[in-house]
Image (cartoon, rainbow over all chains, first blue to last red; front, side, top):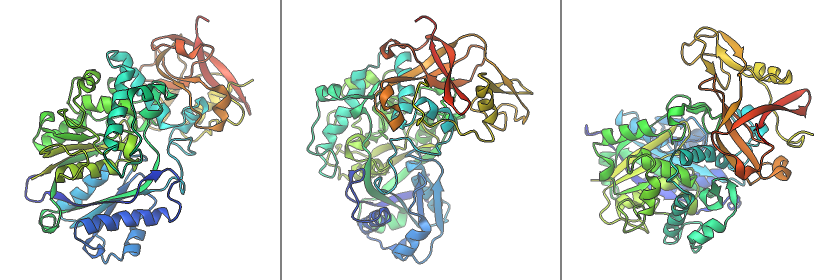
Length: 391
Length: 141
């Protein structure tokens, strides 16, 4: 991505974040539209500058209707990443970048708006789940239960990873959220004792190992280098973006658990991690901060391993060594509070925090941060990732 | 009495998996296997991912199953499981069917005693409507 057609992020926008069912005063579609308008305003643009929309997770706020609502004169790009949940968050950003690099569009807004009180909660039984026949009759209904199976297996194969290490991911996210006034868990500090006192959801996952379920909208403006340089914001370059899946993951954790044995206890990210670093021309040691999709704490531990920040099985020691803590650690993660404590907008809020870090605008700002890894939803198909940077 | 109440979502067989569930109605656990290259697979699907053959046969595993991983569920994500909490969802494997993993329940054991690698035996749970669901319990009580 260094051929002079690099894609940049010029704008970020979000609505308020509320607990699921907390936004009932206006439609989910309006929430998504407000996020898009906020991101465009941040970029110094109007809907007249937009010629593309991208989203994921079967976002119900269709691009064609968004064009009508916002009065966009001409669309050249409308794309949707297959798959529910947040696996496609960075994939939608990758599609926007691909559209710009290939010249199909000049400015693509990636958005996600969800008001779970108006649609459905993701953490419960849902009709029509792929391979539902092979999980529902056994009471395997929700992602927390499904991904607990991978996490249990990983902790079985690597017994040096213990429950307290899961807790450290949760406590770290909460500490960061308590510096972020927009976080749902702002003003609600949590100790390790609080963590262990909370009930189990699906062992080894306790309540605070599981992400929030939220209402809110997020949007990111992806555009050309020249337009990004004209914007009032610090240009943030997309150095590498990708998505995809290894074999068998379509019937993986959220299906009948039939991904390959070799990477059963993984986040399905090994290839993506390798290719992102190669594409960006950087190594894990170059990354200053990471925003890792934290639907469940244990998946973050596995991602730290697969993205090369520590050895396989070494994530427990890595977090216990203080490496993920702001601001003393060498890799502060999920600095807005992440989805465990800021909000759960299917990874888009996590990507927005990555952009804030590159601009120097985080409430837990990493000193002189120049490179950030962002991941999409982990342990699903597709999963996705980004490396973004400040020039 | 069935392991879960009758309000529990049961299978709704489709084109790809109906033979699996027809076998369950006969209290037979059969996994789809490629009739050309012999590779077993689960869940059932129209094409062999190894040799791309469309020809299938059905194979019954021999011997005991083994717990590959499990979780003890404490939170009801559906009304039907409330009275059964905590219950164990396990993923089991079969020594003669490499690559096949089955989501099931591990029953008749104190949940804290379930372990990865534990050997378990199939039993059939009659859920009504002529359907039986495969669940597993430890070989030693």
